[in-house]
Length: 187
Length: 106
Image 1 (spheres, each protein chain N blue to C red):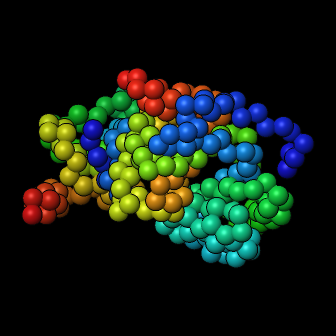
Image 2: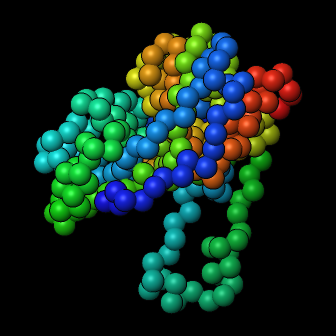
């Protein structure tokens, strides 16, 4: 994996988002893998990789600093600290000769922000039309959705905090929308 | 905003996550059948659709969600979704659609 490349996050969090009802922080460099496996091979592949692949769309499994989310019937998104990954990616690559599957390193594709605070759902709902009540979007749920025009991956970390990631080129747009909302502008 | 039920996510999700993908249950001819077709027949397969008024079976794509295609019955007059179902399931009969409607109306 490309460990010597410096990752340019392409966005900065303005001061107005760093304090107040919702505190926004830019998540540092992460490793991200997109794993596609046929549903029938899910258990066998997970066992060979030494991880758990949740079976149901929206479910996540977080263990030893690696978060694995099921985004579709045959698609998993794996994200976590950079150091934890060296084996996982190579193991998955080797497995791909045995199963119909693919693994892609998409580390540099996304930029993530973490939002924490009592009014966090309000900021997320500025661009995302999902029902964010705890009943409809419980802690641990992760799904692909939209933030206005930008596709995002939304993950509920706790009752009042979310991780939100989008493609790097959309990041200034996503953060801009949040800023405009906090400044009281109509968006 | 309209909420559309995705049979894969098994959830009602906002309409802007989806993309419409045309009439459902149109089987693409295989290579041999295509060879035997003339231009008129091919253009019928490609472009001619029922454009039905009323309950219409159509494809939808959950593009910003689980990324799956599925089929749905939607009333093209009222824009009401009657039922969505997974790819591979057969086109529902008129009786089946009526049954779904009765269920929805309690």
